[in-house]
Length: 270
Image (cartoon, rainbow, N blue to C red; front, top):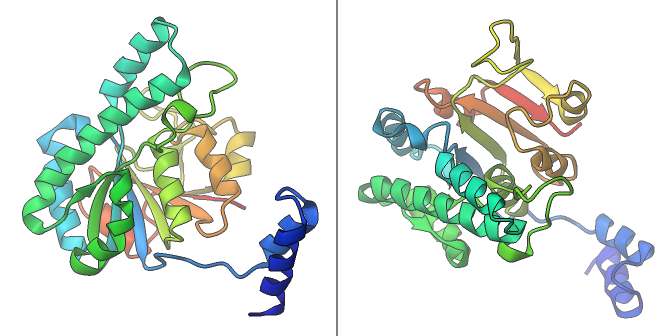
């Protein structure tokens, strides 16, 4: 046991868990990455799964081919159905925790569908309780599918502005990447990456290949392609200090991103 660990053990016996000295010692302790060779891939619900087989089938083929060289934890978004549920539930004055559960149900459905499409290739979908089995899946078939919604449920921290759950599937997938200590986080959307404006409605929008969290906030782009709270999670992360957003409708983009290429927009913590 090294000196840092010994010091931390003694402080844990003596101090309150929010004591500054204890927190500083915990910060100095050696960090451990659980799945340093794996990449978390978030498949957008509205961006891709809601488009049906024209968008999903080619991506399934690419995942199957890519898993020969890359280990992937594949998270699913919720998409349009969740937005419809949010609208109804918010109109009924239900709290954020209930909306979180409703959104999770749709992300779960998308994970189940994607898991069924990949099943014949040995790639399974797992629920929250089965995440402990992820290392076995990765060792055997190099991929596993999970629902991207973080499992806060009724205990989610509500937004200060409204009842829409602030931590949704972008945040949930990032939390998996960070907590497992994965090597990369890739968001698969239906745009090439981040733009100065909405490229679907603004012809003058310019593509941004790389940007920091602070720059996004300064430019007012912090809620344009990823959930705003996800950027704060990135800023505070230990392991995953950048994410990449790629266009999953372009064949080969995901494979290139998994290989470490700069394909879309890279968003950095610093």
